[in-house]
Amino acid sequence: MLKPWSSAGARCAERRDGRDLLRKYVRESNIVAKGGPLDAKGEALSTGHTIRADVCVIGAGAGGAVAAAELAEGGMNVVVLEQGHRHDPDHFTARPPQMLARLYRDGGQTLTLGTPPIMLPLGSGLGGTTLVNSGTCFRTPPRVLERWQHEFGLDVDEESLRPCFERVEQALSVSEVTPKLAGANAAVARRGAERLGWSHGYLRRNARGCVGSGVCAFGCPTSAKQHTGITYIPRAERAGARIVTGASVGRVLVQGGRADGVQARMLSGASVEVKAPIVIVAAGTIHTPLLLARSGLGGRSGQLGRNLSLHPATAAFARMDEIVDMAKGVPQSFYVDEFAGEGIVFEGVAGPPAYAAMSLPLSGERHAQAMADYRHLAQFGLMVSDSSRGSVHSLAGQTVIRYDMDDADLQRFRTGLRRMRELLEAAGAREVYLPLPPGIEPEHARLRDLKLMAFHPLGTARADARASHGVIDGDLQVHDTEGVYVADGSAVPSSLGVNPQMTIMALATRLAFTLMGEEIPCPS
Amino acid sequence: MDSLTEFVRSAPAPQRAGMRALIALARRPRGRALLARAGAADQLAQMLASLGRYDDPAVARALGWDAEAVVKRGRALRRAEGRP
Image 1 (cartoon, each protein chain N blue to C red):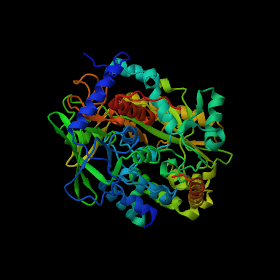
Image 2 (tube, helix red, strand yellow; image 1 turned 90 degrees about the horizontal axis):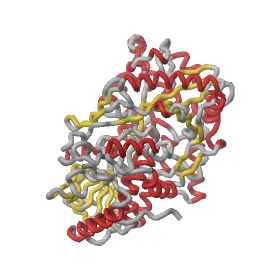
Image 3 (cartoon, rainbow over the protein chains, first blue to last red; image 1 turned 120 degrees about the vertical axis):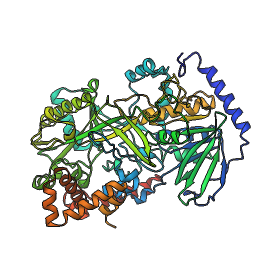
Image 4 (cartoon, helix red, strand yellow; image 1 turned 90 degrees about the vertical axis):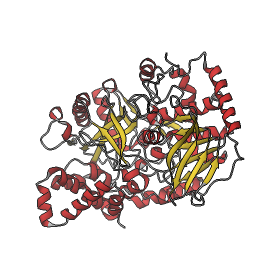
């Protein structure tokens, strides 16, 4: 029988249960008083150091930071363990190679194995990938929520998630980009979409006081982008949460089928244990399944580490008559969703010359000539909502991401690239540079011809009400393990077709309030 | 350390070794001739070279992008408005 995520009738009773459960855990775990903040790098911690808390959150990205702040503000004693660093915006240089090295895991060069190999950039540090994403904010599409109900037994709909989205949107100052701030690169795509009569619009983003620095993906120099490292994490700290950076979690501890805490190792080599009756794993879609597997948790269904969904993406350039200066303005500010029903969405991308040079699909003299015209170059991205599925596992301590693209996704790229050319030509492009080898037309592109990156990994510890089909249940708790929850992209059971940060944050908000047994307050 | 070196150093070991080899090859005439016969490797080598070249502040400024000015403006805004 399917266990509902949270049916309207059962919600109050479940919340009471949740509150009682949490109180019982807290009583039994011999909580110590809230302490002051730990050393930011955890260097003061010595081997054998034990921290006691109500809740230990692993990861400070979209899911972990939100859960930590809400729980801390609700009076819980929270410890956050984050593997990356606390980044100081004074050290942001707006230079892509340096910022890739400093703000991304593996310098932004995490690679999937399979056909074709795909670069999968992941953020590292307080804020996680929200630190380096484009800030695009979409609520979960209703058609996706319907699919979750029917296919995964999750009783969740637009109405039940609405308070979560409203709360997150208020916290992150989400608003639509203005045409002026979007800049000339977005104006090119808009002109093309208008001439073709394709559905389009300006994106909603989590930004406040943005001046269009053009380097969202390389560390916002004005701190306008409201990533979780400067929003939810400071809130958590003000509410007494202890944030430990540079902490690599070895495993989640479980006793008698119930969460008992977490073992971690600091950069200094010191081993630390957090004793907590609630553990929220939010290490990200790639690393959460590996951590659960190391801990011997979540493996019963055989789904752990499987069902990896991505948004494979590519981008085309166009040489325009007018000066575009693509990096002046918000790089991802405009979308074309005419073909969203087919799993194809166009979204803006842009960046400084070094970024453009790296991604321009030309070589030799043609590359040099196009770059000499950089100020006239426009760029737009193509994102596919995939039907392919991949997996994540560990081999000799190394993370292996396997992902082979299926024929349906290849077809989406062929169609998408053809339409992308149409869009840019309709905008008045002198020349369009598609990301394909010379002489290859979109309709004849093979998998190995595609030059792809991917974003938004999801699904590797997917929620399914049935223990035989999913890693976690509708309340995001690991099946058969009390007190261990997952609050990141790995919990999301299917591709969204839109940027996922809002979905992850909304689910984390919902989890926090469910754990506290409280209604989600309406935003003031 | 220049920015390209920093970028290469941050890569996982297999990519790091591959990129260093490509950069070394691209610096020698015989290496460049060898790369010209290997399409994908040549593209990667060119991508790395262009990443370094166009990140050069002088080259970028000539193309209308001044990273230093962007950073300065950001810092001033953060100070003036008490942003994090």
